[in-house]
Length: 165
Length: 140
Image (cartoon, rainbow over all chains, first blue to last red; front, side, top):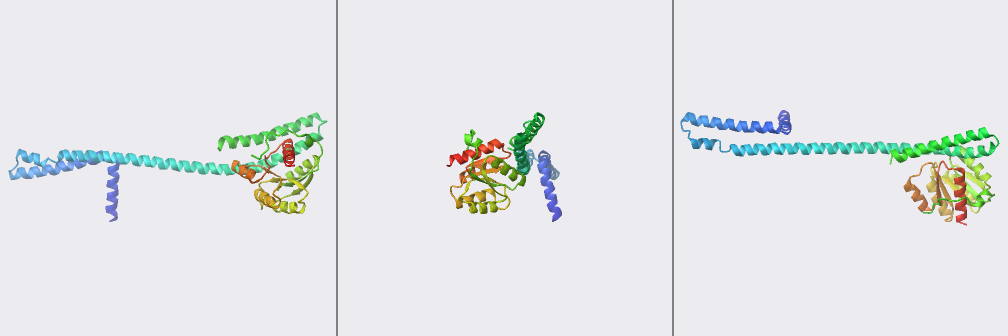
């Protein structure tokens, strides 16, 4: 039972993969049977021209049928291909969405973790600046620290704006 | 929009102010600096490190507190819950919410829920003072 099922499955696979070849076998099979029938009649000695027409009468229809099967199989394969592509695209979209969502979460946590210390730096610097106002060098250094901490904040904000939205 | 934007420094910000501000912040160094900073600006400062403590302090000093400056990402009772609790105690409470990261939807929610202003960390000291002053002045 299992082997029959596997044979049917492999035949289906073959039809989908090579519809033209299968249809060709179909036609050759029919022609072969018709030829045998013709030979049997010829052996019996009662083969006439109209019998020849009779024996091969279904051949055009068989050819049309085989052509239809080829078309049908090709269409089915095309549809399956489109379906697979759509499924793959959907999966890719889902993966991207999951990755983006994880990145957004990380970015949120990062902003929380970084912006508090940056606020501490900003407030500390404003006090420090007042204390070191007389020392030009120290004042320059506090300004440098201020610029650097602002840059950290800007980098983080720019990243979340451009990469994750 | 309740949020105050493009605020100009008011003359009162430069002088001593005697209003009382309750700071709610779980980051200890930041809380300490905010205390110093607002104290230097002439405000009376009360502080709390979480939402529950903030509510207790607010109840204890209800008549004195003019403004609450609260962080949104607090442990336990969140900044939002704390704000709603304070609003139940005093519907006219003036609250400024601060956060290291606030999504636009939450920002709108907070403003609709009654926050007078939202300030994003890292805030500039002058920006913070201006916002505090503007909220205090706008509601008197």
